[in-house]
Length: 156
Image 1: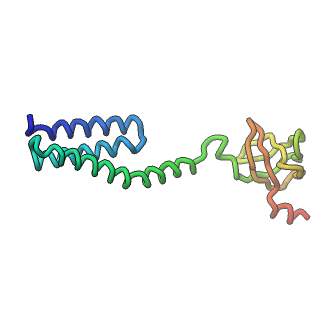
Image 2: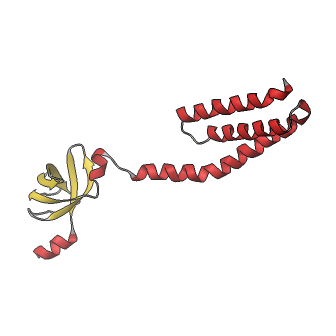
């Protein structure tokens, strides 16, 4: 049995990798990497007398892979937040006012990405028809917009 302890380490590594696939946390994969290194150590140094080397290699490899993988995991997590979808993707987009838009309950219409949206003005400003606006936030199916300064200067 001592000669085949590497199979136990290898089996544990496979189990950890499968768990990582199901729960992408980038933590369990570090345990799997540690198990692979320990399997290699147990192949090179078989026997119970070298068990402490197997365990030490598992610990060091797990810790080292954790230190190496965590910056990558953080970068990938940050990148996920950059992609906005659905309604969130409208924030920051520019459109053209079709009917005048005012603050609060004074709804108007804005053409944005080829569709007509209900809109209100951001703050206390009024935006006239034909002016370009930028979406500040989305409240249900209503856009909150503010006038872009360059179209205001052209109309003045």
